[in-house]
Amino acid sequence: MRAVRLVGMGALCAVIAGCANNAPEELAKAPPPPPAPTAAYAPQQMVVVTGSRVRGDAIAAERGYFVPPVMVATDPGREKYDGKEVSPVKLTAVEPVSTFSVDVDTGAYANARRFLTQGTMPPRDAVRTEEMINYFRYDYARPQDRSQPFTVTTDVAKSPWNQGTYLMRIGLRGYDIDSDERPPANLVFLMDVSGSMNSPDKLPLVKTALAGLAGELSPQDKVSIVVYAGAAGLVLEPTNDTAKIRRALDSLEAGGSTAGGAGIELAYRIAEDSFIKGGVNRVILATDGDFNVGVSDTKALIELIEKKRDSGITLTTLGFGQGNYNEALMEQVANKGNGNYAYIDSALEAKKVLGEEMASTLFTIAKDVKIQVEFNPAVIAQYRLVGYENRALREEDFDNDRVDAGDIGAGHQVTAIYEVVPVGSKGWIAPRRYEDKPDKAATAKLAEAANVKLRYKLPDGDTSKLIEQVVASSAFQSAAAPKGDFAFAAAVAAYGQVLRGDELMNGFGFGDIGTLAGGQDNFWRQEFLRLNALAGSMKGG
Image (spheres, rainbow, N blue to C red):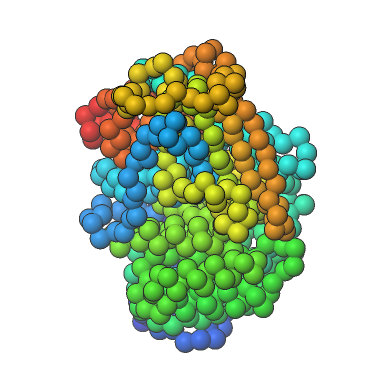
């Protein structure tokens, strides 16, 4: 593997000019860097990627991904997370309705992987089980046409970790789009080049990730680059010239304090100036989340992002690095910006998020997607939603089109799993002495265990559409242990809950998770098995 070099300002001229003894051949032949930013910023040190190839991984070697050197684990106490308590059990007779916003983020999975590969268990607050589950793709049916942008799949299996309980899975799958039918994209790369980004797993990896995305763009797309450090500056005006984009990325260096708010304001102004009606207008923020100068007040920042979201400019956040990583802010602003949040811990992950999944990352096919499940108290006695704690909505929010919710991109999948206790089975909560029997409306519909409702808006719509689907009681009566695709989804759900310290997992451990997941022939699923085994070796089972 070639080295990653940190080049001081004194050697900057030699590196860019391509001095024979100091620069690789490809840099020596490269055109001069673009003009300096229009607004001054004062970087102090340049990070130059001189090339790399992953060893020991056939897939990575074949594609030539850059992977930064293995980082030494740092104290996660300096990192910021907004963990929620594990969802409590609900008594159906008291609270039969569960409502939440969909979530297509995957950052928690990649971030947990970073901790595990460094030999450290991830902090419990860093784990969101829904992002673990939604990191993977499942065998859901494709939409037959685009009159409804996604399919809805429900299935039931016996719980592998609690005798007498069942898992009810809800799966959504958005329709795919071909590259030639993608709407034009107006993308503004907003890059943190402050001193905190001066690390091999930060700015060099940001460059690799965004250079890969630039290579996936079409002639109708436009890219701008805004950076922020001591101040915010425009490095590259809107262009669809891939070579210009990559040269601009190569010229960037890290140094200075972090004026994140000012950078975001400038990025939105550039996005507004290049706005494409009917296209994708998005700011892509790449940072470690270490905002400490400028509009650092979280409330003011969110108000700005929400205002721009309503004008048609969305926000995606890409998290990098460790030690000072502010994941709580990264996830929150992406949620408010109707974008998505991903954590990039390697160039493989960058390729997955911004290459293979670019269409779903950028091109929205349904917005404000909400799920509401009403359980029949005559059939289901208790339930709990696995994950989605920070996506919970009030029951009245479901029919309110003014309440914001998650978006689904082309080809996106969303999976939610409930663990439920049928009437007559021993649940987590003992029967109550003065509990009423289900009313006539419930007992009259004994064939129905639950009613699943979804609301969504089309990308250019303001009025939501409703989908309803009944889960039959017979699905529970005929349910067996989860198999195949469902078994893997259940294994990932268990992995997340065990990492979170869920006390209702009944002793189900990492060894049991590996057995449940079974053999896999998919690269990412195989990696999951290795990570699970690694976690098991750290915890002793």
